[in-house]
Length: 189
Image (cartoon, rainbow, N blue to C red; front, side, top):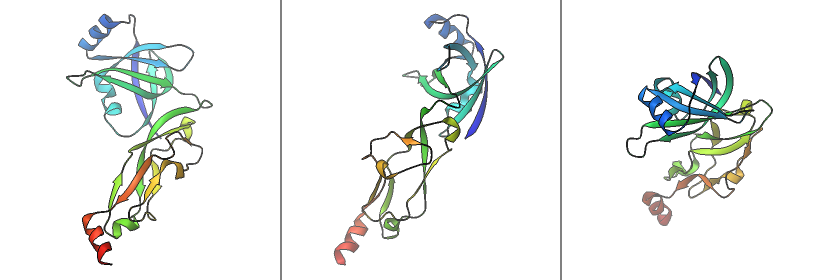
């Protein structure tokens, strides 16, 4: 998994007024939880931009006032109208403590159903998994070569090393849907 370096400084005051004052200075308020104590801090908006606006997941090496932490981005809050980033939450991770996170899916291969005229549909972009952060891959690769026309891959049929899937077992991850051309070819046959 990729790592991301982020520097911040501890906040002296917390609350709505203080957060607004930090935002006016182009600083973004944030919180780090999951460890011994909850740490309130600020980071620059430009410094966190590449972490927020990407589909990839990162392990964040967070340095707050000289002290270093290993964390995952857990949540980001946006303004309801302007879509401006307002607040970020980080979860401190440890090597021996399992964590729940959503990891992107990557499909591999050409499905048999697509060769027969069907259309491949990715129903879920991410899967929720539980495990140690050092075991997380950058993407969950799913082979779809044996996926026939009108068939689906469900979350219950998937397994990944050292990871526990938390999605419902009947959730459809990928499907090959019938098209009009495929239905017409099947009717003629």
